[in-house]
Length: 335
Image (cartoon, rainbow, N blue to C red; front, side, top):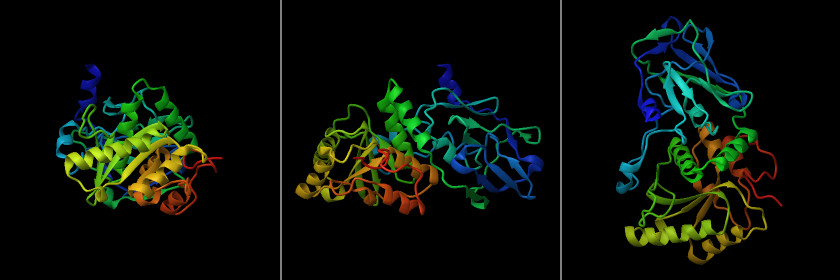
C-alpha cells in the first residue's frame, strides 16, 4: 500500500533554474549516456536536473479515448511499464524494478533522465544554484531548441531491456504496457485490452485514420501470433460490425525468427489468400521510434517471405544508419 501512495503523492516543493532563467536549448549526448546540458536564457549552461516540473511527462501520458468506449475506464496514464518512478525528496526517483526501456528518458523535456555508463536509468540531481519553489514550473517545450548527438539507440540497452523482460514473473502484462505506452508516445492512439474480454481478444487495440489495428505482442515469434491475429480480426469484425478492409493486424516481437521460419511464409499466405495485411514490428524498432520521436508508418512493416528485414524502413525514418549490427534478430531475420 505504501508504494501505491508514494506513486501518486506529489509534494508541492519544486525547483527553478538558477536566477529564475528559462531553458532555451538542450543538448542530448550520444546514446543519452550522460545527463544532458541546458543552455539558459542568458546563454549560460548547466547540467540538467530534475526540478519536479508541473507536467511530469516522465511519469504520466495522456490516455487515448477515441479507440473503443468500453476500454476507456481500464486504461492508465502511468507511463512507466513497471511503475518504477516515484517522487522522493522533491525529485524523481527510479527503483530497482526498472527494465531500462528509456521511455522516461525520451519524455523528459530537459534531458534530466539518462543512461549511466552501466546502462542503468539515472536522474540528474539539482545543486545549490537551483532555486526552491512552492509551485511547480511548467516547461515551455516550444521555445527549446533540442540537439541530439546521434545515435540515440544502443543495441546493448535494447538487449538488456529484453533480457529484463524475460526475467519478470508477470512479463506479459509489462511488455504489453511497454508496447502500448511506446505507441502512445508516438501519437499512435493505443489501448491495452482487458484480460478475459471475449469481444476484444487481442493484447492491444489501436485506431489511426479510421483504421483499426488489433495488436498481438510476443517475446518470441511463433505461428500462433499470425493465427491469433486471424482470430482477433474475425471476432472483432463480426461482433463490432467493422469491415475487414478497415482492419490491419500488428504483431510486435522482441526477436524476429530466422529466414527459414514458417512464420514468414504464413504472413505471405494470409495476405495472398484472404487479403489481410499484418505488420511485424520488432520491439527494438518501436523503442527506437519512441527514443528518437519519429512518427511510425505501419505500412513500412508489412513483412513476409520476400521481406524479412526492417533495416531499410528504420534507416529511412531516421535519415541515417540505425545503430544495430547487421543480421541482428532485433530488427531483421538472420540466416
